[in-house]
Length: 152
Image: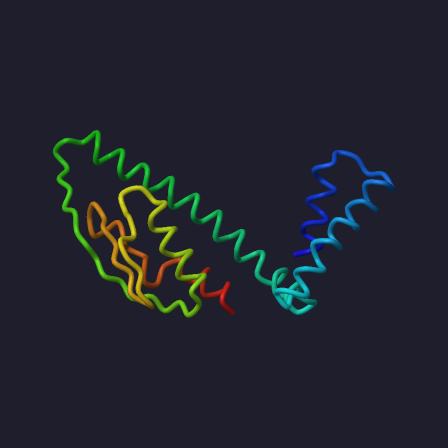
């Protein structure tokens, strides 16, 4: 994470001088000290971050794609008056173990148009959707598999 923040610092400064590099190292050191002392952040956490970063980036790309597809589905429902919607409340169990990944899944569902997570209790999500087929891959889809890789 610290190397990632340092790279962002270098990219956002628009130039590469000795002063910018040293100031960035100083600021990152100021960020690192409280993280190490208060949160137990260390080299293992840094390695874990870099190992999980590709899966998180893939998760973001897939989420953007799913949001675009859901927007098209909702647009089709709006424009096609003959297509009936069947709102339903669905209870889904998730195999995700960590609270953070379940939180990401619940918010991913809410971000996609036509669905909203009503409640989340342990591994049970209650989701309201315009039709049941909008939740086709909630329990074992691409998003859940990427989140499982983030947990590993």
